[in-house]
Length: 140
Image 1 (cartoon, rainbow, N blue to C red):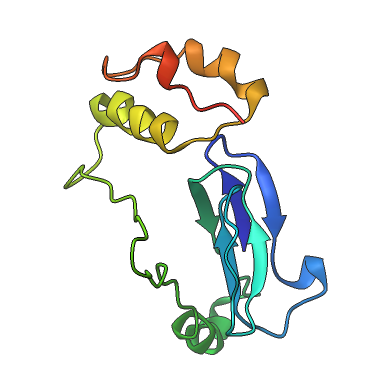
Image 2: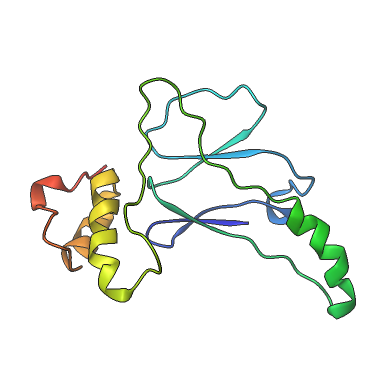
């Protein structure tokens, strides 16, 4: 599993490359998360509050596809368990994501910040829907 921040920079790879190919639980948390886990999950910290998760399974021919299916079925991605007073950011965009929706998506990412300071110059070149003012850039 490759984990990428909102700018598609890898911040972790989980699997054989990290010496942990025996499965287990992983909690992907944002840069400012300070909670505690009591379920034995390994914490992997993202550099941004939004992240990409890419899972690849390698098979060496069509005859191995049937063996890969139970591995696929064993993958579970779940959202956070919320406690009283916790905030969960929900994406209000619905349906198929279209290219013209990207400024609104960028606005949401900026509002959720914090974002790495070295990305601010890049962000200033991106179009927004107009809802994100310069003062709203939450830079870490």
